[in-house]
Length: 385
Image (tube, rainbow, N blue to C red):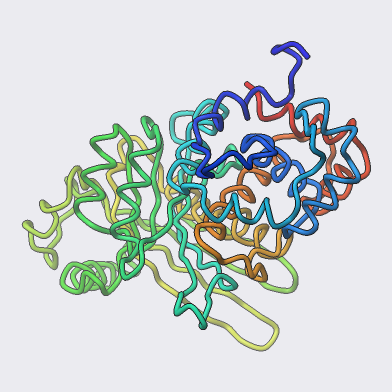
């Protein structure tokens, strides 16, 4: 098959860099073939090693278009052992390199950074806690750009800067929840020629208190008008009111100048007031943000949209991984297998989302891929530029 027509050119280009950790001469299957089989099987609905082996056996003739498999399909034990000992850092780097080539990020694209715990990865017998992954989600492209495991006895504050280094963020807007609202992270985002919108909570008690007091004082003032949008879904009505204060233009009697100056390129502070009406109750929540974006270039309506887009990482990435790929139910946990398979799931999700000729949900696309080789080839080709 010529390179131009090969639907798996992206796999060879980016994942050939992953070193084969196996020693000795008992290698009856190439590592790249095992990775490729696993990706295709996961796209088609396989969620564990046994299912991957069974899919391979059923689709052997189809798979031999791309992989020799002279010794047949590898056993589920072989697949599991390879994923257990592969270096996850190399797999993560290969994934990030592929997505960097695949994605077409535009100026102003929202890149949401958020963490997710793989709940089924804990192992009490081995005294191993569930692993926590931090992912970068491109909201407009609908793609996971990269992910990193949070190191044991560490937290997202350490992992986020490492993840940002893997990404080309120029011209984008990075949104992060309160855990990642750190001065060093803001510095890194600005140094990467991007902007930030960072959630502000009580982990910065002094600045948070000052910002809350400022908006409380200005509540109802016509000098700082609110932008409001509405959403109605499944019996729930929600209004989102957005107020943005420009750091240069506003008079901040309640905020110390040094507290604002400590944040690189800080240009605005934002309040989002969400009010929800349910059949039996009503609730109001106020959230606060720091941003390098200014009202000179970004409207209040756009601030409201950007902050709303952050939550697509939960709705479009984490929800799909849990509900469609059953990530939280996975009991894969030996070695680095849990981390490596989480990357494969995100890769499969990217491919499925990128192929948009079929206007159905992710689960339906996986089923169609399992049944229809022609459609499966469409999904695989979507990984090429």
